[in-house]
Length: 388
Image (tube, rainbow, N blue to C red; front, side, top):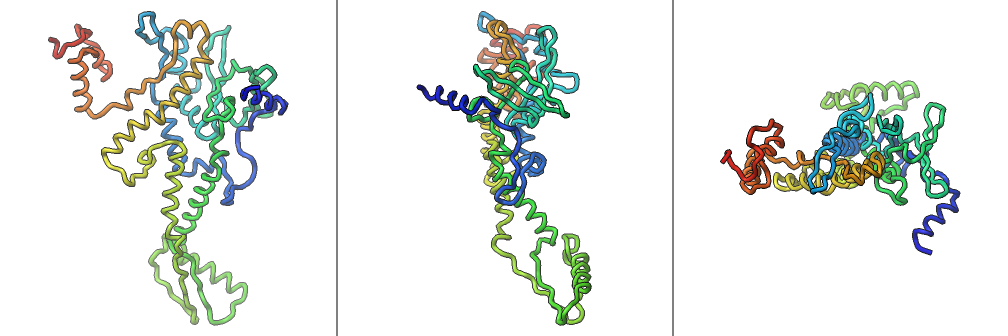
C-alpha cells in the first residue's frame, strides 16, 4: 500500500465528511484577542498585504490566447470566454473587481469560489460566492461536492459548476485559512494595536498615583477620578497645567522597558505578517535598511517570487474549469499580461527598445504597441532603426 492509498483510506475512514469549515473556530487566542475577518483587516499590515496582492493581480490584463501550429500565438478575441474574463465576468462586476474579490478571499480565507453559469452548455457568466458559506465534501469515487448555504437555503453543486481557487493546501483539495493558521500572529498584532491605542489615549504617558491626605468617600472618589481624567487624560490635554488642591500630590509611574519596546514590537509584527504573505517590506511602508538599489531589485523579485505563483494558480485553474478538453487540445489557454510591472523609467525603456530594434527581435510597430501607440505603415519589418 502506497502513501497515497493510505491517505485516501484514512479519508474514507472519516466517513468522507466535510473536509474543512471555512472560517474560524470559536475562542480567543493566547493574547486574549478574538480573530475575525473584520478584526484582521483592521490590522494595517494585513490590510496592506491583502490589498497589494489583490490590486496587483486584478489590474493585470487577463487574456485568452491560442497556440498556433507553427508555435506562434494569437489572442482569441472571438472566443466568448475572452470577453467574460478580460472584461465582465458577470453583469455586476468588472474583471478587476471580480478577481480582486477572489484574491482577497484567498488571502483571508484560503479559498475563493465562483458559480459558473451556463446556457445550453456554454459559459455566460461567473458569479462570486462567499467562502464562509461554502462547504466542500469528498464523496465516494473521489467526487467533490460543494454545499452552499445562504439566507436559510442550501444548494448543492457539482465540481464542474464551481470555480474553486485555493491557496496553500495540505490535502490538495481545500486551502488553509490564514485567519485560522496565523491566528496567534494576528491576535498578537491586534493586542499590540489595542495596547498602543490605550497607551496614546493617555497622552503617551503611563498611569500615575494621585494622593489625597484625607480619606475620600465613594462619591468624592468617583467625582475626583472623573474630573481628573476629563481635564488631564488623552493626547489632546498634553502639556496642560495641573492644579492640585487640599494637599493632593501626583506621582507618575515610570515608563517600563516593555512600554518602551512597544513600537519595536509593532514593527516586528509588521515584518512577520509581510513575511507570511511574501510581500517586500517596502511595499507595506517598512523602509528600514532600504535603499534605491535594493528596492528596485525587490520590485523584480516581487513579480518573480510572489506574484508568479499566484498568476499560475489562477491561469491553470481557469484552464482546467472554464475550457473544455477540446479547447485545451486546440491550444487555448489563459495568461496574465504582467510586463507592465517590469517597465522601468522612460530612458531605460527607450534604451532597451533601441537594443531590441537593432537586434531584430522587436519591430517598430511592436514597440509602439507596447507603449500604447497605433501602428505605422512599414513598421513591421525587423532589424530597422529609424526606418532604415
